[in-house]
Length: 165
Image (cartoon, rainbow, N blue to C red; front, side):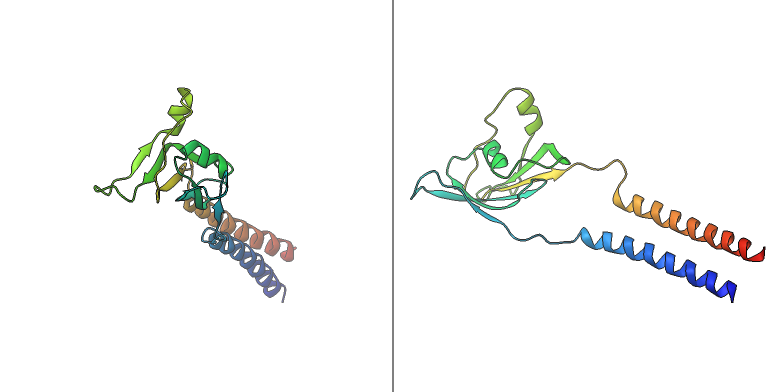
């Protein structure tokens, strides 16, 4: 009976940890609410549409005045997140015949003191990539699972040893 209780207790502990890891995995696919922003200086001002994606605080669809600068757009979006890779900001252009995006090193331009980064065009898509972590999510997940397995085994051994006494 004691052995059955030990196994049942360890099973419950393991299930709790595995479910916690599973919900973390689901959160990476969580879809945020769509965001659309309109910025006008005066009534009737001609606007263009820009899609801002990636490591910014408020990503979404922006309707902004023509001749909007990239730095101003990033400011309107609340700035970038702490894991933003400003070395390689990509801009996809609708009228680009080569289907190649434009890469801008925002970090370098700002260090050089350039405030004007790039004039956006209608229907541009701006992607601020995230920095690659030192240890990726899958590696952390593997370490967590190994840790969980070792903890469970040691718990079973410790409880079994106590029950023998």
